[in-house]
Image (cartoon, rainbow, N blue to C red; front, side, top):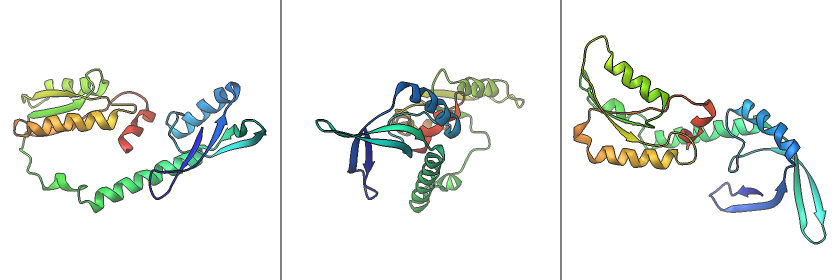
Length: 187
């Protein structure tokens, strides 16, 4: 199904029944994912070439023949700019600069997946630091790719915030995996 949302909100502006033949999908999916660096899944904004078909009983439907990855890349860049503009308007982009940081922040709250390669690398670097410093880390687990990124990171941040006096810093580690998995961090 194809849907177009209102530019002034999240309400539905239009929708149409659509389909893509399996042999076409097998060609378009890797092409799209390689070009955009993101999965070809429901919920993304795409520009597609279609044919319109009409059936007296079922009405009209759209059959997909091609996809334009450049359109999706432009939409992703636009969304990223909008998010950064909103954060700037809310005055939160530079909040970290206002915080005083201890010379050696050694009480570290880590938000990551326990199985993330980046988390393992981070802990290894801390344990084998050339200064011989001791670091205390506590993992606050979160899903670092997919649809639950935002929800689980916010929940982990809430848990850290409830114990804020116990930590010097919060580190969010994604690490490892495909670049396309970073799209959850743009929401």
